[in-house]
Amino acid sequence: MHQRAFERQCAAEEGRHDLAASRVRHPRLTLFALALGTFAIGTGEFGSNGILQLFSSGLDVSLPVATYAITAYAFGVIIGSPAITLLAARVNRRSLLLGLIVLFLVGNGLSAIAPNIALLIVFRFVAGSVQGAFFGAGAVVAAYVYGPGRGGKAFATVMGGLTVATIVGSPLGTFIGQNAGWRAMYWAVVGVGVAAGLALVAWLPRTDALHGGSVRGELGALRRLNVWLMVAVASLGISSIFAVYTFIGPFITDAVMRDASLIPIALAVFGLGMAVGNYLGGRVADHDQNRGLVGGYVGVLVLLVLIGVAGSNLAVLLPCLFGVGATMMYAIPAIQVRLTSFAPDAPTLMGALNLAALNLANSLGAIGGAVTLAAGWGTLSTVWAGFVFTALGLTLYLTTVARPSRRVLPAAAVGGVR
Image 1 (spheres, rainbow, N blue to C red):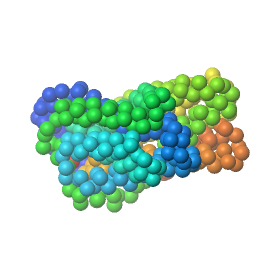
Image 2 (cartoon, rainbow, N blue to C red; image 1 turned 30 degrees about the vertical axis):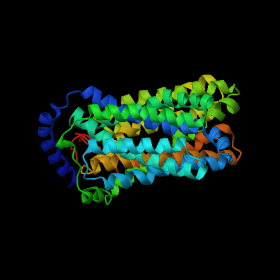
Image 3 (cartoon, rainbow, N blue to C red; image 1 turned 90 degrees about the horizontal axis):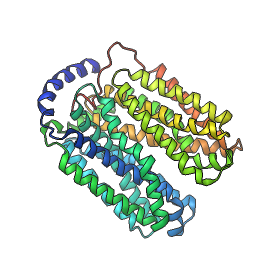
Image 4 (cartoon, one colour; image 1 turned 90 degrees about the vertical axis):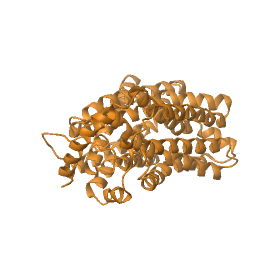
């Protein structure tokens, strides 16, 4: 029933889109503005990990206590973003994105002046609450620019800023924090956020086609079992990326027995893999959702085995790090397309849920890796925790929501703007 309604909606929207899209005067600049916004968000998120020890020392708290600020950001994404998306269901996506970038500036600006860890935790939650809603609304605007049938490409464009943040933003933010103090890193993020805000004001299209939908429609999507099954598939499957990324430092220093100066290089290699996988995955997702997700998950399972068996060799580890980043990002646009095909009337909320699932995956991967390390199974044992989670996610997908079909419908992130 949902599929037939989706087909009718897409057919109607396609006719309206040709007229509406002609009014996007600067489509490439619109997409750049969206990617710049996600770059700023990603730099603030990943940069915080790089300065963890610095604000731990600066605020005179232990490292475990300092990590609560990182966890608070993740909870902001998981809890705050879907809540904002629901509350702003009727708001035009342009207005929503501008409001979100303001909230992002507030959260990071307050983080820069936080006098104690308690307030820093609160401010990081505020900053995190922006992420999922921004990605969801940004994907809707990108889909409006690209046109029907390109939901994967639209979401990959928005995600592109995040992948660049792992390559450039996070290392640069960490460098600023190390040389000018941890507060300076957040001020730098605010600076990038201001630039993104100005770009959004200048280049986001003003159109009624980007108006939101009803709160009832958004809430209705949450009653669909397939939506929650896909959230579980994403949370389990993507966790392996964090069972690797979180422990790249120990992999280099303890498993490969190399100097810590190689860690930034390894992180950059991983980030490059993410960028490549995101680019390819966005294109595949629009034609074959199953291929994108299954191919990504199977690929990462093979690479995890290689790391677990031979990852103590740097010549094996570095290519595998690139591969893990690439294969996992290859799957993520397909997850978004699949999610929104189950809830075509709530594309923004589906984007927020996808980002929430990724942050749940972050926690699962890190916790699973920590358990294997605590059990004394060795530095590289974290990949086996990731292997188990991804295998479970793949099994869940294949046995529940996988639907081979001759024609893959475009995601709601693509077709309809609601």
